[in-house]
Length: 391
Length: 181
Ligand code: HEM
Ligand code: FES
Image (cartoon, rainbow over all chains, first blue to last red; front, side):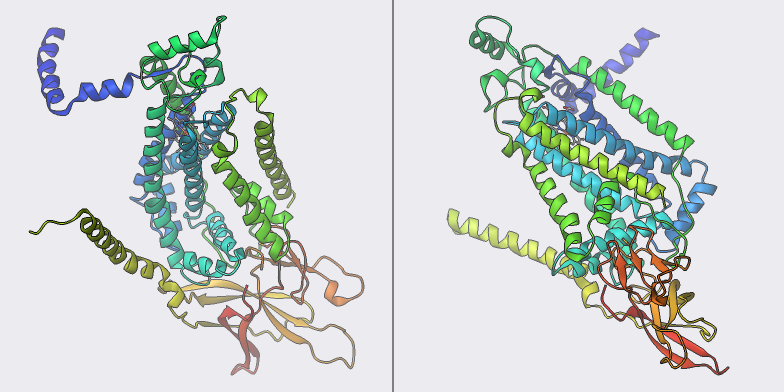
């Protein structure tokens, strides 16, 4: 039996391989050197990728029932929740997938920040990653606006109103996003278009760039992979560079960081870890989607006298900044100037922190402000939760 | 075909590419910007009678107003707070002013609601508050923003007051505010 299968499949594979170059493709995709130490921390990037794939798949299936319209958005999702056998589960996976994705992309960012992986020659790995982060945020917030229930309607109202505080052109932007003065039919079609057609292709393009750059420069990993052990570091480093496998040695970098002291093959070592972590995360999404699902409030009611809108958790820091910044100019300051400066510094980090030092303990001038930003986010969220809880 | 110089070829490609880009961008950008140049439909709805609304007590009515932008999606409920506002209560005072508020907060446009339980210090205008649940903005019954993030007073609907066939007082609301918010 085994023999028979072999006889049949081998020539078929050979035929395909001759025409498509599958083996060569697999070889170049899987046979890569990666740093030996810290592999678990390097699983976060591929986990992000898998979660994005999950969002795309579940999202595609949601479009087969969801209607982007003022009234029908709610009706279609209500139908999906109650009448479609697996609708609530798919919708739940899209929601919990997005939450998990944001958590994991945050951890991926924190880890590359801590290990200073963004330094020469990987500056653009960071920049493309930072842009990816903003695209993901944009997807999360436009997604939250779509369900047509109370929560979504008030998110839509508040979020589309934020541009109003941009000096001079703000009101035009608000008008264009809404397609009018208030939330109306065009607000739905536009926001939907942004969520499914504008942002995802940007996401895919940037992911392509991000992974291309990863392959070009090799995984940096962390400082632990670059220590020298013997009495003659220069010689050791030269030997390391001489015998290392592609994609190392990395270009345009201090020789010490051109090649890790020990590498392992991407396949199977890193692939195994990557798969395990992704499996765990997808399982969490799968189970949460079944147990908790995605909430659907009552239908949007612009004339409510009782509903208390609460922002999505990832939006809480900004919402709390809104509470702290009263009156026109201060509002503009807290919603644009503070986050704008933070975002710019964040994107440009590799061009600010340019020393060759990679050890976080010796980069206090960078790590401390970074931790401060994280601390502020957490504090603002806690203040926000406390405020909403006391309403 | 005559030989093209490198310079001519580059200019030609740039002009051609630019023309393609413009032909794509022109209609698309225009399409996106068109809401700015599209006139809103004027829509109206009648609320009332308002004769029994007590003085200095904001009272909510629901107006079912068509949305004025985009295609018609049918009437959308909107809250109208009718306030007969009298600064000094007592005999010999001028009649109350009629204020017709939207419940749209001027901060981020959440729905405010009237809470009459707060008692001010003697001055009737200080009794009660419009409360915004989003970021805790507060307004007085005359619309003044007194606390929290809201940058300007509560907006009023464009409206006209008329007497119905039954002799009672009604208000016709238009789908616009008197102030820009
Ligand atoms: C859609 C989102 C993203 C995807 C799919 C993604 C994917 C990946 C993958 C698969 C890796 C290699 C494995 C690893 O080191 O974890 C990686 C590395 C990297 N990522 Fe991302 N990433 C994303 C977002 C980000 C963000 C938001 C940042 C930072 C702002 C970032 C910065 C980096 C850097 C600097 C590296 C190089 C790490 C090294 O060489 O040590 N990425 N990314
Ligand atoms: S929306 Fe009313 S206080 Fe922010």
